[in-house]
Amino acid sequence: MFRVGLHCIGPVRSQNAVLTRFSRSLSYLRQSGNHVKAPNTNGNSVYTRFTKRSCVNYYPQNNPSQNKNIVIGAAALGLGGAIILMIGEEDYVPYMRPPLSKELWFNEDPNVAETLKFVQWNGRERDLFYQEKDTYVTPKQLAAGQTGTAVICGKKVVSINSISRKVTLDDGSVIGYDKCLIATGGSPKNLPIFENSSPEIKDRVSLYRNIADFKHLDGVVRNAESITIVGGGFLGSELACALARRGRSSGLKVHQVFLEEGNMGRVFPKYLCQWTTKKVEEEGVHVVPNNTVSKIELEDKKVSLSLKSGEKIVSDHVVVAVGLDPRTDLASSAQLEVDDVQGGYRVNSELQARSNIWVAGDAACFYDIKLGRRRVEHHDHAVVSGRLAGENMTGAGKPYWHQSMFWSDLGPHIGYEAIGVIDSSLPTVGIWAKATKADSPKAVVEASDDNIRSTVQETVTPETPAAETKASSKTSIAAPDHEEFGKGIVFYTRNDRVVGIIMWNTFQCMPIARKVLKEGKKYTPLELHELAKQFNILGQE
Image (cartoon, rainbow, N blue to C red; front, side):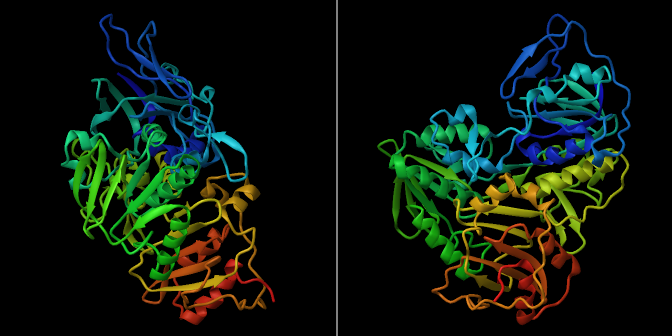
């Protein structure tokens, strides 16, 4: 057994965002190292060393010695002295997950599943991975006292002994730790009708979460005539649009089936949900709302879905995109509490679950002083909560007050950013204006040179328009059927207080949105119209 100063558990796919910030705070990590320890017959320890993407085994001559405890200071400044060992189930080092349902699908290179490169909206090419492999050290080097980050990939932590501070891997290896960050993320949900289907049908049904899923689906769609997406939320809608765009050249037919009235029906107000659905259809998707799958059959090696409405859809493959379950399988062994309502490990305001154990990202259920106890599944939350957990593991004692944002693109010309509680059951007030060429995801990436928009939001503070700014004649609080929703702001309210905000084709305004939520003031609809001027959507007359 060897001991490391800081220890992070979780599938690398969920660590991606968490550890982007966490390891920047601790001596910026990512991407190439080597691995762990499994006993073999000659008494040596097996380490898994990986290149940028794949892992191979090698045997050091001697077992690693036990490390001293590491004290990490000034984590937010990225000072040296950090010792981090990451353990992930995937065969890949940390990478960005957002492009898996967006930009990767727009790459026309037939080898995209191998290169994992994509072109940002600004035309710049990059790959999926955060950093080059030479930024990592080996576990043996960590054990010898060298600072840095090592990654064990292709291994699963099956238990945590929080008293002796040891974790056990699925190969029987035991690793000691001083401080432990759990970033296990979540697993995609399935539906019982697919779970209980025959093996032949299951072979034609996929969930979608990681690189392996992308590789599999990419191979499927290159040989398919039709694909059905089940689910109308963020992932389902992004995948449907992305696959339909690819289908313009290949002839692939894309169907999308979901229970709600339209795309993003649980998130957008009804009028915006309906408008978005029309735009998804314009991308080439056959959208089937207000429906569920009532029967599945195999017909001529294709999957036949009989819907509640009586409609029948036959396709080569089905992708189920209906949400995420937080992974809390370590709760029992580590004696951690799981929230009965939100799911996830319950943590205090400093993201601590118990002594020497912190939780960040999708798996953390935390208390928001403005919005109550929450669990958030978006990239920005994973990034910032990972950073804060890293700081608190060094004794910072900081509360988690961050209001995380999320974003989604339905192609290069329609995108939105949101913050807070975005729930279509809440009252909303929308203020809309005519868009310009600068009001699109493509334009904001061209301006910032960064496709991960939560990164951009941290460094850009937009100017607030002058007080004399007036509403354009194109703006409206109501939502007439003919309205073209070029750009706008949607305020979600609870007891007349703003609890959530969508910025539709309106970018780099997140600091203003966070300020509005933090203040917690009461507003009338007309006052919200005035408030929208701060987001610079109305222009000058």
